[in-house]
Image (cartoon, rainbow, N blue to C red):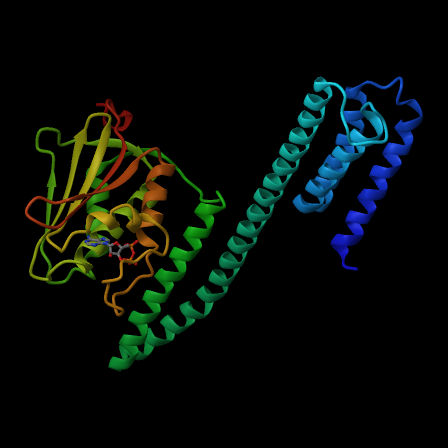
Length: 340
Ligand code: ADP
């Protein structure tokens, strides 16, 4: 006999004990007393042994209730219609409670699994980072001596480091452990820092920057590092998914209560059916060439970072073809830092 059967046997015994306990007083007990006594057994079975045992016990308790405690005794027949109602209510209650327990058990189990997965991702990512740093440093030395293959190693090590970084951030966002320091910052500083970061990968590409001329001092409350990361990611995507001869637009403007950073390209855009899915973790549409770098984490991290700061990140099709990604963060009207 396996464990589930032993458990069931144990609970049947508990039901028998409960019946034996109440039986001598059945003339004095009312329906509610009996229902509570039996419900205790069903609850215990559902909580300890899961839905199947819980439901089996619910049915057995229902039968015992009817047989021993509903007149006429020692038969399944029922005299009064009201007793039927009591029995039916008892059965429904037992089933609902058992289902609730099962639901709670599943939630707990899946939360535990998610936590374990994040811990594994975090520790593997950390372990990967250290050798990557060594590889990069050695390749850098060799590249300085003019070895072209070493340059390639360095580029690939950078790529892997970025990927590991994405995995780490993804896991810390999901476990709620991402540090966040939200301050009043200026749009221009962020645009400048973003341009500087993408300079390396944007060689030969035109990036047109425009800051709202009507409102040159644009302030908002955001975490500088995280927001920079989002904007850089959007620019890199725009570069990656558009024709190398086409220009990329980077704009910042006030949009009601928001400061909007807009990155627009003249690439193929995203088909209507994919527009929300591209923000899902690890999602890459079928058409993406296999050698395109990335694992489909960028936009999901970007959106999570935007939302953690009280902002948003959305996609819109661009008029005339291409993509427009808009990051919104809460704007600041009278910035403390700009007071003179
Ligand atoms: P990755 O670039 O690693 O695939 P992302 O999360 O950054 O991951 O992007 C998910 C998908 O969204 C990409 O695979 C691509 O198909 C699509 N996408 C993102 N940015 C653009 C863009 N500017 N133009 C067209 N498609 C894009």
